[in-house]
Length: 457
Image (cartoon, rainbow, N blue to C red; front, side, top):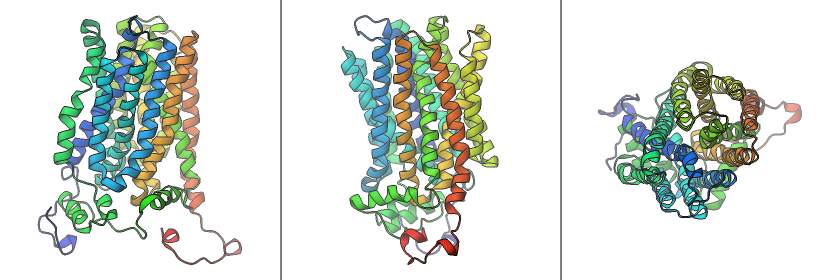
């Protein structure tokens, strides 16, 4: 890898830090997250067909449990990925994550029992959980100045584009040749994306620097027009370093805001994965036809794309926490409206508008964490925000599945509304909690302490 010397201003070929200069990174992350969204939504898109397949033996109760296995795998993947990058870097972990959910999809396509199918979804969850926080951390690190929220929103449009593609597969492939072929489509990411990531994705300058590769970190930063990374006072090393990275999330500036972010993420991911898994089945149980019920998943993801673009630009102006709180509240209103059996056209409209708010509410939780944590904490912070939030993703599919098995599908919409209200309150309090945590203590209540790397940070 070519290295550079001298100050950044003296570099003759240093590009400006714009969307154009970092486009390769954003495009690769967009492609990876596209397949992430496809894999997450495949299960919900084909579940009505799987429930009608007597040979598999899937019931609504088992379907909800399997949905929770998927998100439990995501929980483990999200909590593990951020720390594994300290050892081997973000690029290889991104590639392994894509390979894992492709392998899981192949297991699902081959499954002759619900146990093997659930194992496949668990393996997929490991990859899905690891991919998202790393892709978010990469685009936030490479994002142009003051465009982190917009860049995050653009990245997440790929998730919903993937979800729409999964729905199209569920509408076209599953009825004609069977639901298994939809899961075979989930193997494609390993063939396309993994080689591209290993060949074209640069390593994070911050991660390179933390591993002691100063010249390589500067070279990557210079190539893409990024500021050269600055070393942290005490580089993390081994188990002690990983524990310090977690404890840093509770430094004075963020000790109150961190748990509030976790609560908001719990609610947001309960909504995202509860809706992605159960919306077609819930709508079918409410009296809508098979085609219309699956189409609602397509419509809500289309709304999600619009919402990402609106939320990103709005958050760059008014702040991601404020936007997320409003979006959560509007999601709760949409969920309550869907409890009623509206006309088909009006239901499509409500589903689309709810999609505008639902998915981007959670993404703005991620963007809020970007404003709270320092560069050295971002991957760990995002990993824990998404990881703790994955408990909501585990609870959502299981809880709605339990309600559906008892014939109480309408209470699933009430559950979504309550999650929206709780998420709105939690994220709205984050800015105030951050100011409270960073408020200087008075001399009367503070004793002098020696300066250390922790207090300097």
